[in-house]
Amino acid sequence: MNKKITVNLAVAIAIIAMTVTFVVTMILSMQLFNRTVSGVREKEIMYNKLSEMDKSARENYYGEIVDDTLYDYIAAGYVTGMGDKDARYYTAKQYLEYLNQQNGVVMGVGADVIKDANGYARIVKVYPNSPAEESGLQKNFYITKVGELDVKTLSLSQVNSQLLGESGTSVLLTVVNATGEDEHTVEIQRREFDVPSVEGQVPEGTTTAYFWINAFNSKTVDELKAYFERWQEEGVAVDGVVFDVRNNTGGNLTNAMHVIDYLCPVGPIASQQNKDGTVTTLETSDASEVELPMVVLVNGNTSYAAELFATSIREFEKGRVVGTRTAGKGTIQCRPVALSDGSAFSYTVGLLLSKNGATFNGTGISPDVEASLSAEEEANFYNFTVDTDPQILRAFEVVDTLTGRNDIQASLEPSQSSSASEAGGAGSSLQSEPAGTDALSAAEPAA
Image (cartoon, rainbow, N blue to C red; front, side, top):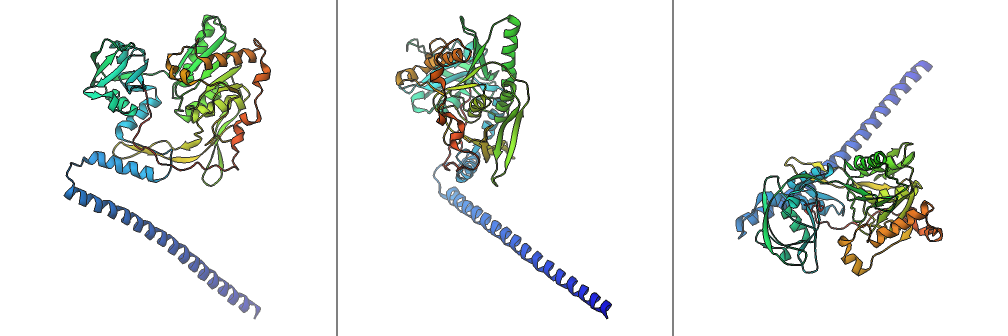
């Protein structure tokens, strides 16, 4: 009798288990089905909307629709609609330029320009061995026309777009010299050329090395090493370093972490806070380091990977940060996702946290030593040299103090607000305000 009850009970339990499993499976399947149907309906609504707009425009629009341009702007609109101010859409041309930039290679004429108060494009840098240098262009020359286009009617991004281009193509520039005289035209053939991400020197009469880092790319760490190795071979005395990352908008985060690893001792470099709140270590420094006191010079245009670089030098206790508060761009974007037509897009995947678990997103990094420029000095920024730039001279003073050559220690004590941790750690309010983005604008590379 007991045996029969046991068998019956086992059968009942099995039936109940099967029923529960069936019900749970059906519930989950229905939920998945509903989500799928909802997704299909949403996509159908989106495609129908675009189809209706396209049909009406193609039937009635007075002008001509260029399909390639239209598709780019549709994709750019999607990226803008995500509400991610750091998301980017790259046209096929922009994506190729991006890939070249990551390797320190640019296709164009080889000149950096800014728009001056009169609306003309002033050349602030001519790269060595570039088409611009070979054509006789010099720093402080003004570009007044690109082809038949008056530069005053163009934005800086549009000017750079004209200077960049495929190797072998030409651009006609109308230029005047630094005094506004000798207007002439010059035809320059664009081509591929290398852009160093690092320029270094030890100014005469000092033992402090000065490095200007314009971006972090795949060559940056090797370029830095080459300077140190050459100076050692030549017997050049170096007992302190200034890294100038003013106007450095970051470049590649991984490559910046490689530089930090080279300079700093063992320890975590950075981590990523993910959407679900988990934290992933991105990179760890090994025990080798450059054993010199360091100063990082920053300003309001120092952004992203360059900000991580600055705060890492401070958090690893390698040196101080000098200048003005940085931009506060502390989110991490995925590598650009290549699309079938050669274009690409990237979007935010996490929050960047420093060695100490702090975020500078939205707040920037406060310097240990404030050093700002007056309005007049800002206007002359690109005319300064290492010997005349007030911020660089202040950075050199701080190095002198760190090496014991100067006694102004009282002015160097960082205030509590100077730490990157002021912005809060992983538990703080971490979301930046979503905003629209000029989805088609490229970063301003050397042209």
